[in-house]
Structure formats: structure tokens, C-alpha cells
Image 1 (cartoon, rainbow, N blue to C red):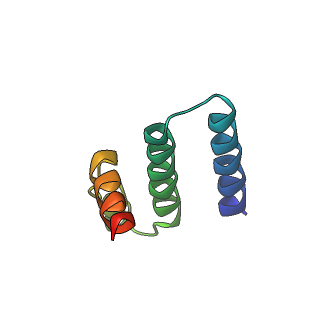
Image 2: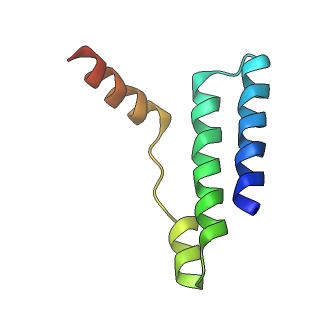
Length: 73
């Protein structure tokens, strides 16, 4: 039930960001935060929680560079 609520909340936030003219960078960050939230909510042990909380995040700039490389090929 929590995951459905989280998914609905994430969709609402994404739609609101779109309506408020959020930049691609802001939308990317919201997506990253959502993924981390889902991971943390699914964590059963403290170790899993810490793994989610400390997972390295790809910067938007790295993501955009990799995306452009794929699109250019």
C-alpha cells in the first residue's frame, strides 16, 4: 500500500513540476529522490537502509553526457 501511495505522490510531483516549468535537472533530481525513497521504504535491515541512504548518485551532468552519447550514436 505504501509503495502505491509513494508512486502516486511521485507522479503528482512530476506533473506539478511540469506545470511549474521545472528544468530537466530538477525532474532528474526528483526521480533520484523517489528511487532512494522507494529503496529506503523497502529496506528490512539497517544494512539495507544504509546501502540505500549512501548509494552513490549519478549527477545530472553525467547522466546528460551519457544520454547524449547514446543518442548521437
